[in-house]
Amino acid sequence: MRKFLVLALVAFTTLGASAKTDKDSVNKNKPVFTVIKKNPITSIKDQNRSGTCWAYSTLSFFESEILKKTGKTYDLGEMFVANKTYMDRAVMAVRMHGDVSFSEGGSSYDPLYCIQHYGIVPETAMPLPGSLYGDSLANFKEFFSVLTPYVESVAKSKQSKLTPAWKNGLQGILDAYLGKTPEKFTYEGKTYTPQSFAASLGLNWDDYVSFTSYTHHPFWSEFAVEVQDNWRWPMSYNVPIEDLTKIIDNAINNGYTVAWGGDVTEDGFTRKGLGIAYDIKKVRSMSGTDADHWFKFSKDKKNEKLDSLGVNAPEIQPTQEMRQEAFDNWETTDDHGMHIFGIAKDQNGREYYMVKNSWGKYGDYDGIWYMTKNFVAYKTMDFMVNKNAVPKEIRKKLGI
Image 1 (cartoon, rainbow, N blue to C red):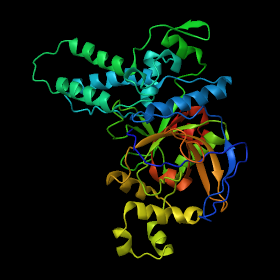
Image 2 (cartoon, helix red, strand yellow; image 1 turned 60 degrees about the vertical axis):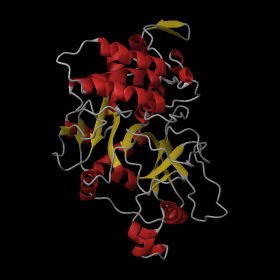
Image 3 (cartoon, rainbow, N blue to C red; image 1 turned 90 degrees about the vertical axis):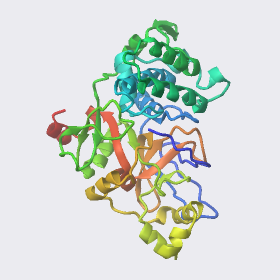
Image 4 (spheres, rainbow, N blue to C red; image 1 turned 45 degrees about the vertical axis):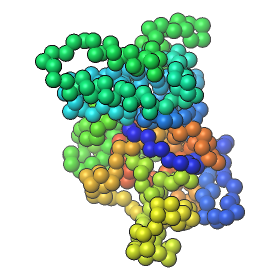
């Protein structure tokens, strides 16, 4: 998934088992959150100027899975996954003569595939992101300005036969910007290969399943969600809209977390660290603004009015038809991957999912977003979860 560069991001997190925000002296509608259920997560990371949310969010998810299973804390290497995945994606693009897109994005299945086929390494086994080109964090601007034309030139080549040399050249670019992936490394006094390290983490890598909810395929079947960054075409189980939040709720309440992928381009995904499925017609009415004036406002002015409503902002009640229409007309787009780990409520009783982002420790609450259940039901593209976290009746119906 692509990372959207959002300026002045303000995020929310909670401290302790029942944390609350301070009251805002200017905006009396600012949320005051109370934690209902929170599961352990590892530290907030910063993907910086790289479209690697899919790697950061999914490895964060697996780090929480390891915490739950073993009690051990790991920092898994995103750039190892990026190195392996970009080579695989380039091979696919060349194999398809350029008809499969090549980009920075990906899906939650890419880190899982990487671990299953190549293994994984701790962060310390690879150069720190950005360090090979003099930066302190990942910055893919120059990297992909070199990498993308290289891949496209091979994929669109007029040659009657390709030699293996192009892969060697591509691997050189990947290694120069991301670092070489080690065949062996030492971690806490033991020597591992990436495969043996993955095996040592205590997880069954076959336990992970993906869910979505759209009507252009039959419910209770599997299909590959049709977005460009889902380029490996892994299958997701298709369930009705009400089961999306039912699965997430069951996972959180039983100590599991969720690797989420969806749309964050909506007005409701605010710079204040919220995700709210705004009912714009009602918002206009509450703010004393008619439709003509509303559409003349700048984006900043709209956000100002939306943000001012805070917990009193009215929401739509998403339906299956609304989900489908938004997917088909490009309102719901494949933008970002994040990590859902808890449930909280505001002072009005509205419930939100607590979501770990990978944009660093922005704002008052250090990089955590709060997305309402309506927002998640409406704007989820798909999500990955441990199959043991799925309600028994849904597992039985799907045969998993």
